[in-house]
Image (cartoon, rainbow, N blue to C red; front, top):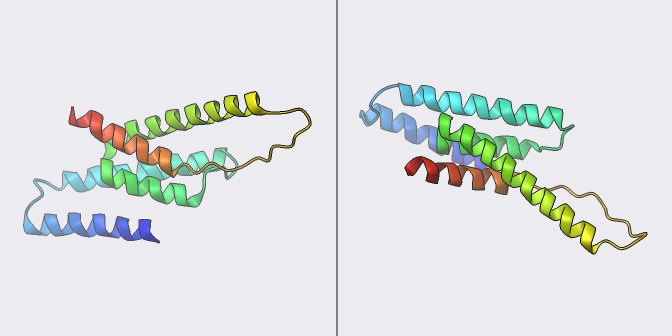
Length: 130
């Protein structure tokens, strides 16, 4: 709910800036449209190929992060998010294997991907500022 409100605020602010003449060209809209569509398709494909492992909220938050970062920065952010998520999962498995005892059941649990999307978006914004 809050993420959808954030998306609406981003879109409203961009439209208001364009109507005031603050935007240099309509290409900024195409950049945002490319970012949103590409982010939606990448996260949707990840959801389909992972058998529903990626939640619908992660897809919506990916679109929100795409509006924040822009197209090129969003592609870098998605790669960073995936790498950070993989490293976190591997670290979690290593810790679990070292602390595991024989004949103990460890339930499978879900790891939300939103923190990794956030970290990827912030890292890519930081890198593109340099």
